[in-house]
Length: 251
Ligand code: 9D3
Image (cartoon, rainbow, N blue to C red; front, side, top):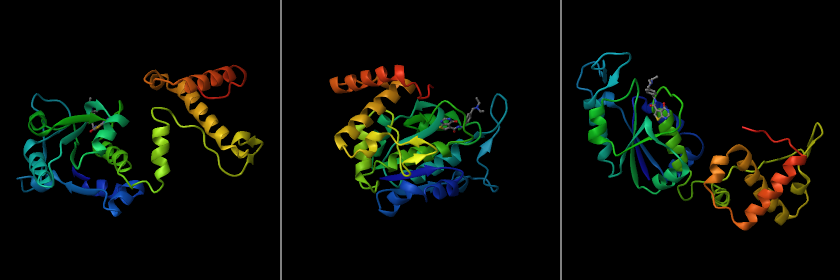
C-alpha cells in the first residue's frame, strides 16, 4: 500500500519509518511512504502556514490554503481516503487498523498548533481518528502509530508468519507471559510447564494465562468476546487458582 503523510515535520516521519517493521515493509516494496509539507505550498515568502484564531484565544491555527495544496499533491499519488489524526476523532482500535491495512492508498493528515481551520476539514477530510485520550503535541506521533500498526499487517511484512497467526489465535485477548534463559534468576523459576516439553500442555497453559490476564486487567475486552466452552473452562480454572496463589497485578 501507499501512505502519503501531510506534515510540517516530513523528516521526523521519514526518519521514524527507518526502523523495525515499517522499514522492512518499505524495503520489501509492501509499503510506499510519501510526505508533503504544507510549507512547500504556502503562498507567502516566509513559508508561513499558520495564523491567529478568529475569536481570539491562545495558540495558532493551520490555514486552509497550504494544507489544501499539500493534500492536492498527495491526491495525485492515489485515490485513497484522507484521514485526519486528531483528538476529536474516533478511537483507533485493531478492527479499524485491519480495515485500513486493506486499502491500496491513504493520505494521513497530521496537525500542529491548536489544529487546522475547520473549513479544510469539511472540504477535504473523509475520516477523523484519535489514538487515545491523552494530549500529544501534534498529529505526527499518531500518524506513526497508524503507519506502524498498518505496516505490520501487510502480507509478508512480519519475518515470522507465525507472529500474525498468533495474533489471530489470541484475538481480542491480552498476551500470555513470556520467558527465556536462564531458567532461574535469584530463585525466580520459569513455570515448569514451559520446560516440560509437552506442547499441548504449554498451549493450554498459554491460553489459560491469556484469558486470566484479560479477565484481571481488561474486563472490558473480555466482555466483548464470546468464549467457547473450552475457554470458559480454562478461565474458571484460572479464577479458582487465583484464590490460592494471588500474585498477579491488578490494574
Ligand atoms: C492543549 C491543546 N488542546 C486544548 C484543549 C487541544 C489540542 C490541540 C492539538 C490537543 C492536542 C493537539 C495535538 N494532538 C494531535 O494532533 C492528535 C492526538 C492527541 O493529542 N491525542 C490522541 N490522538 C491524537 S491524533 C492527533
